[in-house]
Image (cartoon, rainbow, N blue to C red):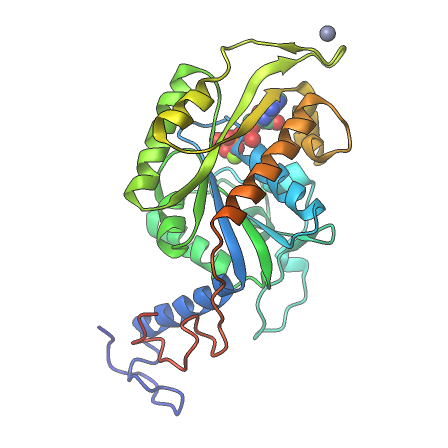
Length: 316
Ligand SMILES: Nc1ncnc2c1ncn2[C@@H]1O[C@H](COP(=O)(O)OP(=O)(O)OP(=O)(O)O)[C@@H](O)[C@H]1O
Ligand SMILES: [Mg+2]
Ligand SMILES: [Zn+2]
């Protein structure tokens, strides 16, 4: 329920202008407008840390951008944002000249990729971030509402490990987000994957498929594959859960070097097995998305219901 209007104005039709409810309604409207221009939203998640979510997100985003799509990459790993380092982006929002009434510009990587990460908004990237749930929710809502994503084909969202506040906020805020679950071949990681898949079931998020990362090892000297852990577990788990298997990416030391240098190796022109594996994953994602098209909502009136609604009362 909205409280009494503090500042009666001609633009206030609900009597709630200036109240907290009105601010949330306004932000909801901005979120809907922003999301209404983005065709496909993909949350990259995993039950376990360090399995390669950020690597997969970055390379998927770059792979799609290299194929000519307009892509956004949103880093919602608020405690350990990694995307800027992986792409060697050091822009700071403080240094950007912004009109008060305008949406904030995301960082730009090449022609087709826009990037938003908390590091971009922080003055010092080494500041520790101690946040509780509601603040995380607000930060993620602002990443969508206040940023000028523009028209995008894909928004790739890099999540922290687990099924906590961040993926939950994404699920609640972006109703048509679809998930990619990343795993490694070890049993423990696969057990964690089951949790991610159960989470998706619970929040009714469609799962595009699963990626098995660090699947075998590619010798950098001879490019031959060595099975370190047993591979294929991801494929088995995917079939157990009745979801698509998007592909396996082998462990390749050059991936780490690429990630640390801000030049993602998997998107390079090299024809190594890891680069090829990644290209296949990008193709499989394109195929899966094309198989289940989502209609883009229009936001002519600033509200994605497409009519001239009152955001305080519209349930669009
Ligand atoms: N296929 C691969 N081959 C070699 N190294 C890899 C591969 N995938 C990821 N890595 C490396 O493993 C480390 C962890 O990867 P990444 O940061 O992408 O994982 P994450 O799941 O996002 O981690 P976190 O849970 O901390 O967010 C990084 O140093 C990355 O470069
Ligand atoms: Mg990560
Ligand atoms: Zn070798």
